[in-house]
Amino acid sequence: MNAPLAERVRPKSLEDYISQQHLVGPGGSLTQQIKRGILPSLILWGPPGTGKTTLANIMATESQRPFYTLSAISSGVKDVREVIEKAKNSGGLFSAKGPVLFIDEIHRFSKSQQDSLLGAVEKGWVTLIGATTENPSFEVIPALLSRCQVYILNPFEREDLEALLHRAIAQDDQLKDKKISLKETEALLRISGGDGRKLLNVFELVVNAEASDTVVITNEMVLSKVQQNTVLYDKTGEQHYDIISAFIKAIRGSDPNGAVYWLARMIEGGEDVKFIARRLLISASEDIGMANPTALVIANNTFQAVSTIGFPESRIILSQCAIYLATSPKSNASYMAIGKAQQTVKQTGDLSVPIHLRNAPTKLMKELGYGKGYQYAHDHKDNFALEEFLPEAISGTSFYEPGNNARENALRDFLKKRWKDKYGF
Image (cartoon, rainbow, N blue to C red; front, side, top):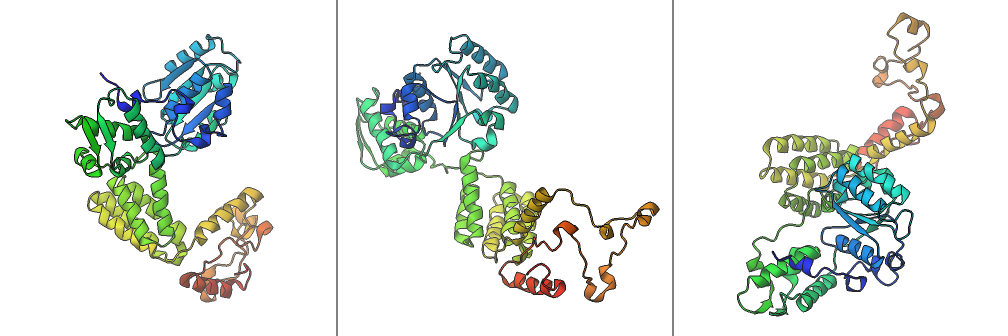
């Protein structure tokens, strides 16, 4: 069975490697290390089809090292230990030319599987190269991550993708017999989504679908042969985090159009309806908060509604909520308040509860003065008594500072009247 085009034209040397110039171009952060054969253990982090596996192979080849490879999808702890044992016996112990162990999709390894790599990396039995589409900060255990350098691979630029196509036409034996003309490439590039492997494999599909040996690539021709222009959205990958980030930032920035667009991207990509609703709940409190407390009620009702209804009808409810939040006044005062309070707790430790605020459920506690002097607010005018509710060491500290919006401006006046400028409102 023939290998796919992307595999047939996979580069074998740095000179043939397209893109990622910040890593392997002239002056790239990895170029000299590869040429000298002195490599650190590292993680290659980037979207699918950006050349992570290819680069790992080139690094091992050009540094003239033994190369072992595992896939996190099909390998377990036993497989890891067997490969490490082979590496130890290959004569590379503590050598700058020691074996390279490449693990594809390392983010799929469990904690125990990643733990099994620590000793070999620490003792220099192998140089680890891991490839991942996920943020290593979240998916690689800290002990392993601290022993590796992280290098980021970027999606291919338009020029890179077109260069891949031209090279495939020129180098692949199965394509040389055809007269291929790239009249238009926009459809191919859009379908690829910056994924070089996907681009080449779709290109091969389109070329092979033509009966004639003369093939003219146009946008119309490509779209007619590719059944579905799939939305680029990986529910478990980096796109997942990037798009939800854009969605929340559009809401925070009071742009309902941006919010609805990124919502549509998630819906078309098959995102979990509850995940979207949970993020709306967080935004309602973090970004709107006391400027419009009803936003939290709306977001919570949205979560309950979409949990009951599901897609496709939930798209309407999510859209309404996203637009409501985007067009609401904004305040992060509640978010900032708890952050300041937590920082104070970390700095001051477990300060004692003032004795007048303590609970006194037993006779002994009452005799010790627990609760003595506490003023019951409802016994006073306007249900308010001027009282100290913080430990003495931080008395007068202000955590909540009302935002500059109609509702919180009124709250500021309310608090000033009550607290007589104690907190500097």
